[in-house]
Length: 95
Image (cartoon, helix red, strand yellow):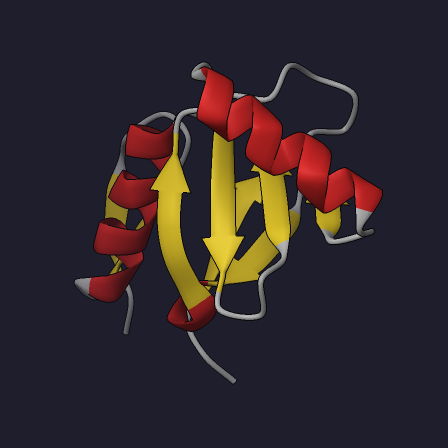
């Protein structure tokens, strides 16, 4: 399996399959979500919270997250560099 990254509330995504992480505030991003919902390609990982990022996968699925795109990028980079990152910003070596 690939690099699993926590996208909030205990949900994880295989970041080896991620094409892009974008902000959902633009009109094209909103259309992207709407079209994916109509085609049953949306995976909602927000737990009822406001969507703050859209994760686009190689499989053409869209994952919604309640975390900011830069937070997700930081988690990916932190885990990819051999350190485990926590929400508070602290980290420990992953041995």
